[in-house]
Image 1 (cartoon, rainbow, N blue to C red):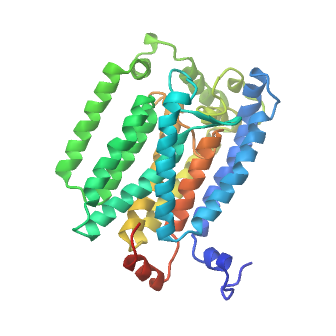
Image 2: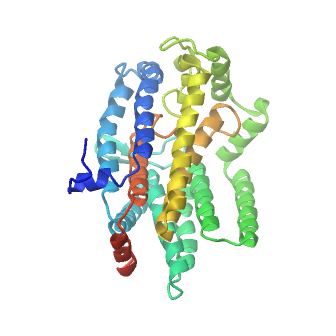
Image 3: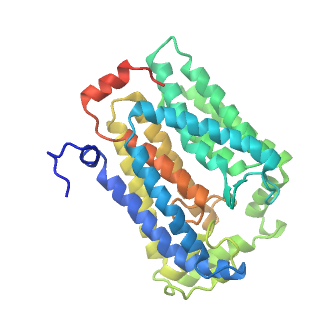
Length: 379
């Protein structure tokens, strides 16, 4: 146990972070390994890999993910913003390089190979984008001589245009909704809320008209007879098969036929083997983390911390909702992972970066440090 009287970097960190938030994230990480042990082996065997290939790789990525969460959570607010700027610039550069050098997977250039590892740069751009947008909005509100709101407006198209060109409509939608949420929390007038909502509808209609894969997904969602709905139908069937208590670990059959049982549809695999009650418990853990994060953001007196923490926890919760809603056929398939539960190295590391940002932003800081934060260069 760390004493309050201990004056060390770790001691200061331990008594200023929110330990309930840390506990919630730890529960998700452990649950992700358990559920992946159920959904991963059948997929690995179909691909001719070792039985626990995905589980072993998830553990391999989980180690640096924990290191990222801890190291980033130690940062001061000034260094946090600088890290976000570096990650954003580097991530956007990799996105552009992926157009030329990245492999084409399912008609999209979203990945870039670094040695034997595949990296999805857009995953890392997301948390950095939220922090930079929050900084721009807060500076615009604090200093009239800084065009913060204009910078935030320019930051959105600079981010989503390359995503649209990949194409990655799911990430584009997620980033745009989170940006709109930040704008609203920053004090956006209802007139602009309605305008942004109308622009969003225009964007959806345009995507439906000009992007064939988006049109196919929407039509399959609205009309099952318009295309192949095997994955969604099978995922829905897993909930009825599992019932309230599930068929037991290893006893499920859906994971043997679902191509994405270890990623997009791991929630459905969990329902069949562990039951709807466990799925509800998992949903409650996500809800607890989101509500705890929003509570901590509301208590923070600093505008930048409040906006950035709200945006990060909103992105985290929205991504979880999208994944679970796809599994129960409440929205079209988006190819989005369930945070800390689904398999995926890029997703896991980017989530760790985002949660590291969140923990650093919500730490209880001495008033002297906050005054120093206000007095120094904001970048």
